[in-house]
Image (tube, rainbow, N blue to C red; front, top):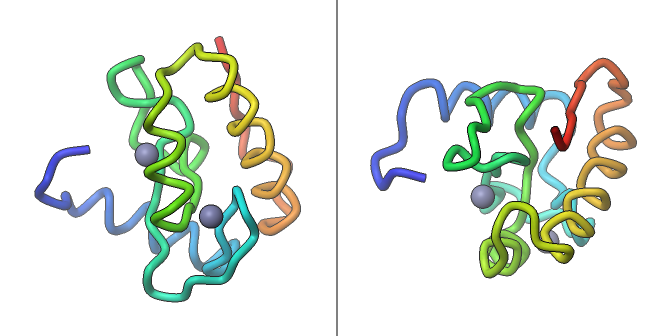
Length: 100
Ligand SMILES: [Zn+2]
Ligand SMILES: [Zn+2]
């Protein structure tokens, strides 16, 4: 992510917080204002700035997942956990995400 937070970034994060609250979608911890938004599919892999591609992570989990690259087994494993929690927290099955 770029250092400067773009307006669309803020709005996607805010929309996701409205849907899901401020729990980390990886570890489940509620970190309140410290929550950060994460592209499920990274921008370098063609991931979009969209709600479907958005998730919320605490700083620890966010740092952890970025030790891996898109396509790594661990990145995929963590992303599946995040997707499961995103569906549970948001109760939205229409937030479509594909690994393709
Ligand atoms: Zn976490
Ligand atoms: Zn991220």
